[in-house]
Length: 80
Image (tube, rainbow, N blue to C red; front, side, top):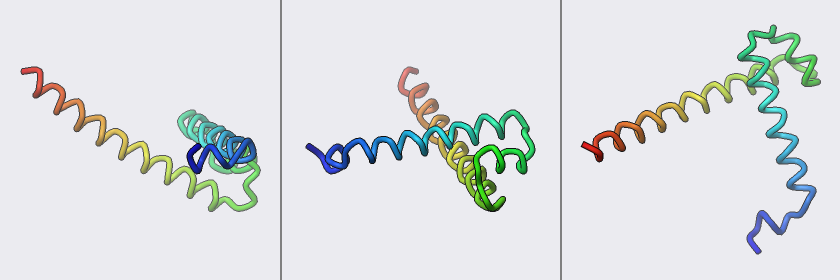
């Protein structure tokens, strides 16, 4: 058993909730929903919390695209 699996269902539940919240942030932001509305829907007391989430998600998406582009280029070169 690894350290993560030993944490039990409470840990899994918290991770699933966090992933669900991130997914909601992304979907609402991509649908151009007003940030104040996103804040209220997600129950954030402070608008800054919502902005931090959206900024970090955007940064993660940019980084993922860089990785994807690199892997795609390397793959294309190895097939020529």
